[in-house]
Amino acid sequence: MSEKHSLLQVTPNRELVFTGPFTDVVTAHMTLKNTTSNPVCFKVKTTAPKQYCVRPNSGLLKTGDSKQITVMLQPLEGIPSDAGRHKFMVQSCVAPAEEVPDLEAIWKIVDPSELTYSKLMVTFVDKKDPASGDDNKTFTNVRHEDTFASAGQSHYYRELGNSFSASHSQQDGTVASLRKSLKSTIDEKEELQKKVSGLEQEIEVMLKKNRKLQQTQSDGGLADGYPTVQLFLMVLAALLFGLIMGHFIR
Image (cartoon, rainbow, N blue to C red; front, top):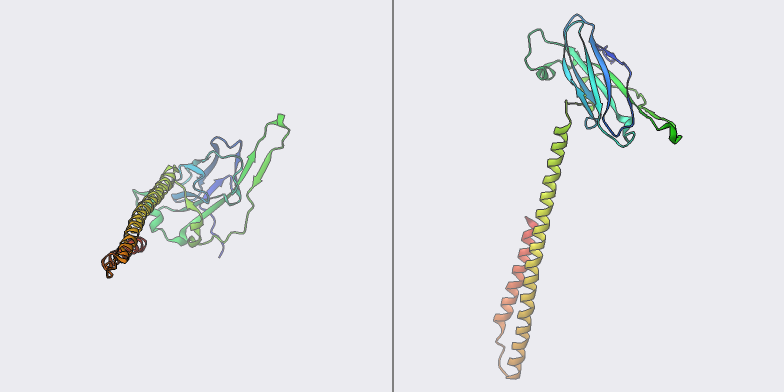
């Protein structure tokens, strides 16, 4: 199935160029123009949502209207190692006849067959200081064959918000939770080791007393009178085993 022609005129229509150095925010622009006879909704998506900030990333264009989109590449140390997967897509559809207060709701109710797309590659130009004698390095994202005709394939392009701080906050929260869980496990392990060590010491003391008692009874020619001590040691060992097994079964 061939890809539907986009409802919007996108400039540039093939690639976005980001010129380094990349140690600070690098900005590129694209312009969207509605050349149709209907109002059009749009949304900008990317394959690398953590690296870019787009303003505005969605909106509505009436017939003949145009909008400049600012795309900001977040600071990097040189050309990103995954530059080959950086792409942008402008998704568009005809706006509903009735007025919709929440534009985001449109993308949940629109028929996927009515969606159109414009895709852009990304080119990175890393400018070097002429005095250093190094040549400028350019990396152009190679265009691969796209089979991106249906909405079912559009999940490859993740939605890009006006800020990427929420994504980082969520990741930070996950890392903090994992660290807390790991610390709790380590603390429990250390506490269990202390209990095991204490029980082992108690068993060793009881064994010494038992051996001493046996020796005394043997010297005095008394009958065996220490089953109670042995039974206590067996119970203590069983408790120790149960404590260890109970901890790992939880």
